[in-house]
Amino acid sequence: MKKRKYRILWIDEEPDTLGFTERCNKLDIDVIKYNSWDRAKEVLDSRFDSFSAIVLDAYCVLTAGEPANADFLYQAVRELSIIYAQHEESLPWYVLSSGTMPDFHKTIDRIGMGDREEMTTEWGELFYNKNNDLDSLCQAIRHAVTLKKDNKIKALYREVFDIMDKNFPSDVEQTMLDILMALHFPEENRKFDAVLYYTQLRRILEHLFRALNKMGILPDEVMGQNDKVNLANSSLYLSGREVNIGQGKMYRYGKAGQYVFPPVTAQLVKNILYVANKNAHTVELDNKGRKIITSYYNAQHSNNLLFGYALHLCDVIVWFGRFADNFEKRPEAYQSK
Image (cartoon, rainbow, N blue to C red; front, side, top):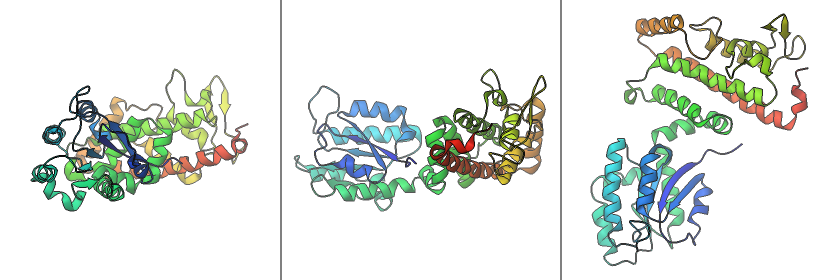
C-alpha cells in the first residue's frame, strides 16, 4: 500500500547533487523544487494546504530568468509572512545553504528574529549547512510536520487515509479530514456544519460503492443508473441480501448466506444510511431528511452523532482497504455468480 507522504517546497537554483530529495523521500517526504522564488511563491499561494514546510537557499533567484540575488532571503521571508497572514497559518521554514555568501550569518540572525526564533523548539533550527546537515534538516522537517494538526490527524488515522489516498478522489479524502479535524480540534472549527457533513458521509460511501463496482464486485444494475448510486440497493447487495431492481429482476451476491460486507460492517453501513432517510436511495438528503437531521442537532447541540458515524465509516474504509488488497491477490474468490 502506498505510504502517505508529506510535501515540502524547496527553492534553489542549483541541481540537487547532494541527494537532499532522496534523503527526504526515505522519511516519506516529497520534495517539490523550484529554481526561482516567483514561481515557487505562485504555487505556494495557490496550493498552500498541500505543503507542510518550506526550504530556502540563501543566495537564489527572485525572478525567473534573472541571476541569483543577495537579497533573496530578505524578500522571500518578507513575502512568506504575507502569505502566512493571508492563509492564517504558518508553515515551518528553513534555510539550506553552504553559508559562503558575504555577511551570511548576519543575514541569518536578522531573518531569524521574531516569530521564527519563537518556533525553534517546535520547528528546529533555522539554518542547515548543505555539506554537513542534510540528515539533521530532514529529521527536523519530519518532526515539525508531524506536529502540524492536520498531519496529526493523518498520522492518527494513517491506515484510513492511506486507503482513501489510493482509492478515493482527493476532495473525498479532504472531507474525511475536515470531519476528523472538527472532532479533535473543535475550538478551531466552530463554524462546522454537521448537517452538511452528514450528507458528505453518504458521499464517501458512494465512492466506496463506486470502487467496488470498478473492481467488478458490485454490478452496474444494482449500483444505479445515469451515474447515480443507489445507496440502499448497493448496501443490500453487498450485505448478501436480495435486491429488486425492478421489472421482476432480483440480484444477490453469490448464494444464500454469502456476502461481501461482513455482518458488523453491513450494520455500520446500514446505520449511516438509515438516519433521516429510511430508504437511502440517494446521496443528497431530501427536504424531509434534512429537517430531521437539523431538528436533531438543534435539540442536542452536539455533533456526536455525526462524529460517531464518521468513526464507524473509518472502520468500513479500513475493511475495504484490506478487502481490496486481498482481492488483488485472489479476484476469483469474489465472483458473484
